[in-house]
Length: 104
Image 1 (cartoon, rainbow, N blue to C red):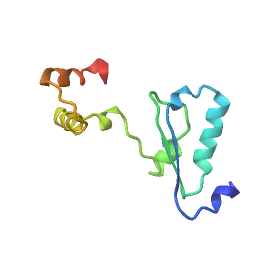
Image 2 (cartoon, rainbow, N blue to C red):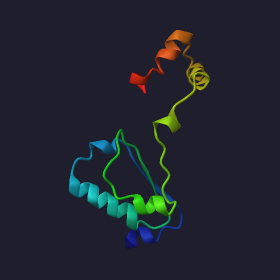
Image 3 (cartoon, one colour):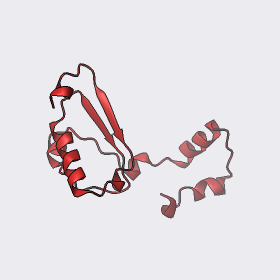
């Protein structure tokens, strides 16, 4: 990756809805990109389900941070503050319903 190797500052590549990437070849190419990218390259991959990417080496080398649903879940008080910050007032019962298992 000679073009990326010359980077002086970190460059972030953010990909959302990665679960929509169905091509096995495209997933293989993404895996190669992740494994061979220079240290200045950063990736944020957002997906609704785990993909079959060979990221085990990055995990073992502590080069991978994974944030799962439990790490993103707000407490009721955090959710209330978030909605209030947006100018939305919800009753306690409505706020509690936003956190039911089928909604998480």
